[in-house]
Image 1: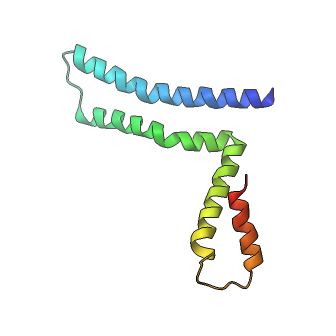
Image 2: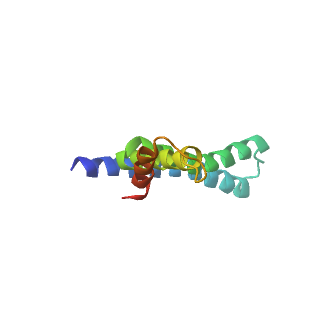
Image 3: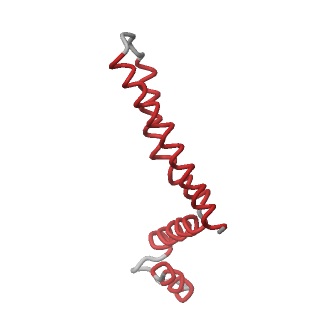
Length: 109
């Protein structure tokens, strides 16, 4: 039941952010097409930034509200860092067993 509440809260949060960001965009375009008043360039730029913000903020919402998502992201970052900086096929490592176990854990799931 606790997991369902957390997932529901995450979905409501993502939906609310989507509604705020895209809703203002739709209202501005509706007002621009219906009303005789022109809407300023700054207002349109701000609304377009909010639309882009919607896509940018979703991973942070998932990371804050989902433990499994956080763990997967941490694992992905650690594994990519290990593969590019610590393990190089032409170098000899003193801790090859530890490095091999760490790399192997990146590919198991």
